[in-house]
Length: 430
Ligand code: PLP
Image (cartoon, rainbow, N blue to C red):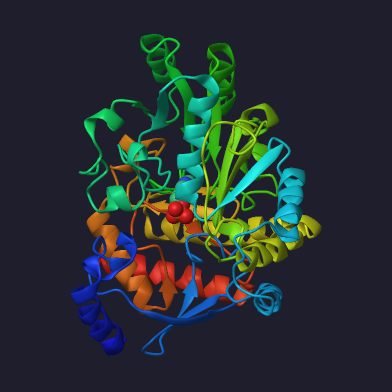
């Protein structure tokens, strides 16, 4: 594979951009080699500046659920642009998207649009604190909620990939209000709540975490959290930035039948444009300025182009429920193919899977929390990643991420992915 243009760009980028990238995992440090620079993407394929084309299994870390550059979304963006790119004043599209979101995710009675998942989670915690009058919140080890200071403690995603789950720059004062618990352990939550009686404003988690690789909730876990939060007056926040509109129209909360008080959203909601949102019960959201006293604002929030892209995406998902059956079937086919290959090769690696998200972990241990995820052989994953890339499959460049499938994956592409996976496994295990 020839990547001379990417190499030259990366070399130049490092002179001007920290680490040469605008988001850490993109630098490929966890998997070795230089990152490929992307020129364009369409459907199931992404193409780099050297002309190499790859089958996409990240899809911009989730948003491109219909594949890249979908004509419907492109058209909506172009049409919106004809009327200007930003007004800093209310628009009809913001009302329409709020109505649509509250219809698709019933636990969200009111919603505020922001520009990223990070903004959504930071704002949600602030609102929960304002609503309850309490300062502390509980966060799960290995879960990632963006790069807000109070979340960069035992954080997943790029933070763990870069070996900095606790980031320097976060003050002790901030860190002391973040209480940590292992995922999938109700007893740990009970202990934490008891030790901090009447001090916990919120419990935030990814209901199905994808930022330490994909991990599934144990039976009764989410229900148990709901009960504890009800009993203790704690605001339960589901961070569905990844799972929202991906696992189902109503996200993980629809699949598992557990209703949070607040939800944070991002990725798919913007159809590939920079968008996030947070919402929840009316009485909580009424605390948000200007309805209430908790301040939160944004010059570009509800941006007309971003709203047009998000609306096109959400209208499609809302009116085409079969999208989810298609995604589930694509996920099933790929994971079944992977499992067959593992059997054939006599390997016992763990695959965690739900719908259109999955992770292949380089360990035979069960992965159910942050500690167990760390059992994975990350060096072997790095070799596997490179081998897949050279076979034209674009994966997340870290063991601690989920893959995200799109409806653009045809049976033929699925076969190519399964074959590449088997060949890569053979190659790296020599
Ligand atoms: N929450 C979750 C669950 C995420 O996966 C992410 C990003 O991957 C975020 C929050 C932060 O979103 P953003 O990168 O848009 O700030």
